[in-house]
Image (cartoon, rainbow, N blue to C red; front, side, top):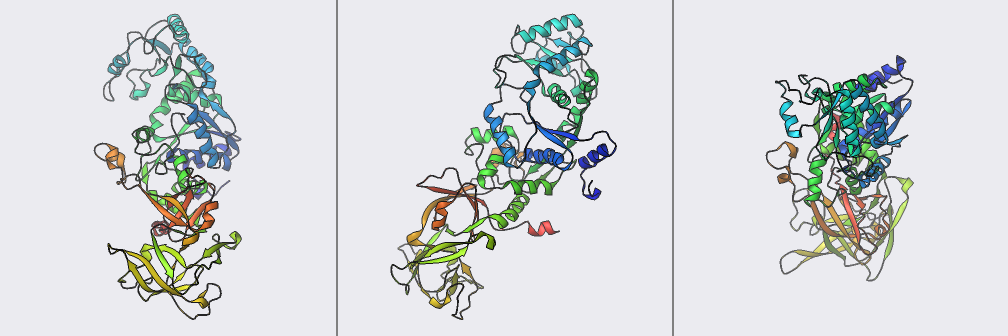
Length: 551
């Protein structure tokens, strides 16, 4: 089916299963809990599960693990669906663990009837005390040997709402001395009198993840249940339930999660950032959430390429954020529209250009001819970047300085003759001469320059708010540092400037991405209004990862 050298370990397993006739097609699933927004760790899992069922015969289900009504909400359900579709994937069936609440309840009754589950009255604190440690066996609950009949009656009463929260639990009866502590009579059901976002108040007992997960896989005939490495200890319990219930034998496989440098990818920590107002919501462009990435201007293709490049393995590590930016630059370089914007403006006046005159020049609208050209107004007064002028030029300085010449992008060559300073000694205006015969595309001047700079016509420029985003944290792995991870937040992760932009950008759309020449890649933000344009810097032009990728 494939070049065996390029297969990851999961693809090897699937190809063997198909070749051996174990399955004729595969079924995978992506099972998020709807208690927050998806982040880049989820993107890896999405690309993996949906990618496998694209590569091999079969399909992928989207199943929401909605077994904890206290933390879950339909807002998160909708955001998760939007993120998956935006990444370019479609699920065959949309399912919810809550779809199976009745079946799961019946599975629990089956275990009780087999003498493999019991209702326990002890508190969570007592339970923790009796559980033992990795080196010491646990102790049986005093309620472990209740009769089947008593357990059935009590479990029915739990369902009927006869007991308050925390009064009783249903536990599996396995082995309190088991070396795997998850096998020491784990909880199957707990009492929660809470409104569920789908089932309302129909249920007041809810299955634990470990009981709902494998059985939901079985109900859906999932052939390859793919989890991250922290679920390795859970696999034994996963298999125990399936064996004892004698149901469809789904099997769990684990791969290593990939953490990104200079950020955190824990829902709990991301929620702290949101609640403590360190960021402006879940879709803040500094957040590693998929919605934040989308708002910042990342493309689905770049994220899919990143996940493919990183691959999957059985050992966790931290992936440099620069690799994600490298994948993004590669995509945007081939797809982004081109435009000019001046972020730190300095006035340039062409003294020998006619007052009130405007020329309509043309420039490339994208990375190749297929994008066509756009019209750009040119006039006597321009804005250029302050960094493109140096009063006392350094060695090998090729941009503007007294007596120096540069080419204005898609326009003319100009020479700086004079400059004007304000009362604080800051340069506020350059006075330049232009050479009419040096027009781009029809240059007959014979003049040579070593630099091309961008510009915007001052009378025609629009003003936009530009948000310059950087790493959210100052350290590579904030979760591993001493103290509170929030102590390492980068205070300069967002800078806001007012920029002059060329008039074509007044027609910018949320769907398009733009390369502001020489400044980076940008996108229009949803905060934009008819009277105020807002652009986010997606990524700078500097490609620090190019050499690393080629090694």
